[in-house]
Image (tube, rainbow, N blue to C red; front, side):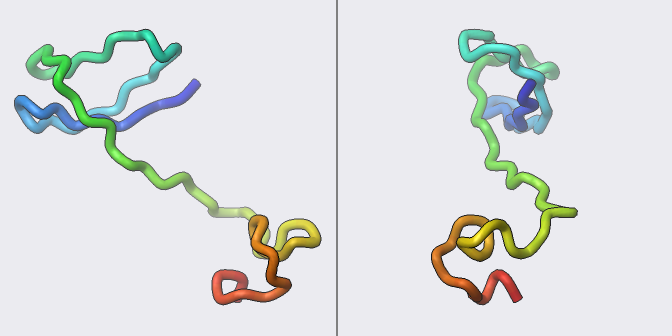
Length: 69
């Protein structure tokens, strides 16, 4: 179940919300506004190996690249 990060465009409160389906209406917990912006949240990669499979790092076609070092 995805947890999304939002910022309210009305009161500027930042919060996280568990969203079970796309049709679910999300509101700001502080002011109740539906005027929200979904924040970009990079996912964690801690614990993943540097080289994955025969394509090098995470699907790149090079056998060695700057992000693999």
